[in-house]
Amino acid sequence: MKLSTFDFDLPEHLIATRPARPRSSARLLLARADQIADRIVHELPDILQPGDRLILNDTKVIPARLFGARHRMGETGETSARMDVTLLEPQADGTWTALIKPLKKVRDGEVIVFSDDLSAEVTGRADGQGRLRFNLAGDDFDAALSAVGAMPLPPYIAAKRPADEADKEDYQTYWARHAGAVAAPTASLHFDGPLLDALRARGVQFTHVTLHVGAGTFLPVKVDDVSEHKMHAEWGEVTAQAAADMTATKAAGGRIIPVGTTALRLIESAAQDGAMHPWTGPTDIFIVPGFGFQIADGLMTNFHLPKSTLMMLVSALMGVDPIKAIYAHAIAQEYRFFSYGDASLLLPKG
Image (cartoon, rainbow, N blue to C red; front, side, top):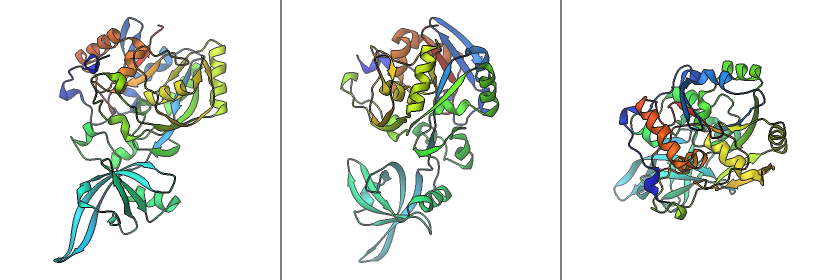
């Protein structure tokens, strides 16, 4: 299957740079099989059925964007260079992989200073990334990072404006719990307390899972034949209780509806032959048209980048031609796209 299959033209003005306020006032494109309707996120209690179970990713985004300086002594005295660092993933040895710009202006063994409290030694460089060992760990590191770090906004937002204090709340889900993501599970950003209360009153149930979203979610697909693409791995966990709850919902005739592609990818990784199992570890599952879904009956998700792996995922769920029609409708009706944009609820079985 060719990459061009998943391409479309998106007007620049439809890329959202701020979220809807309140969160649940965002628009919701409801797609049931071959039917499309324009709704609002706060209408979900009228759309979902008692016994449905929403799967929520409770990862917490860390303020992974850091700005600092590298200082160096040379023949002419001390020189410095400004450094732009985005943390990617913690390693077992206590270091972090990171995007460091400009990488060519730093050497192994040099220290990047971010604040009076926080600094990091460059312990290695490879494949366009660096490896950093911070001077702090545990709660001290978390506190220092929170004080100076900015939210790692997606490139298509960061190109239009810098992150600010509002993003520390806006780019975090209502139920964020386990720190470790460098990108938000953005479909979840539409939920707030009143909406969750209304869904509970409707008889909708919730299960939390954890998938730490990595920066790889924004990596472009660089091959024309999508079967040659290698997915990035992300760490996730489905507890035994979460697996049991999903199994019980299916047995009772309820629907399993992940909120976000991250939750969907994780539960499909943990499902075998239609049965859920506990899962802890990395997943690099790649969902493309022809994929056999084992557990998910639908998906709530935002609108995705052209030619992205997430466009392939929603095409696998709904079908290539139906997704093209859904996106054409969204563009014609001027839905807001991407991380801070509007939502869709995709229900392939009606």
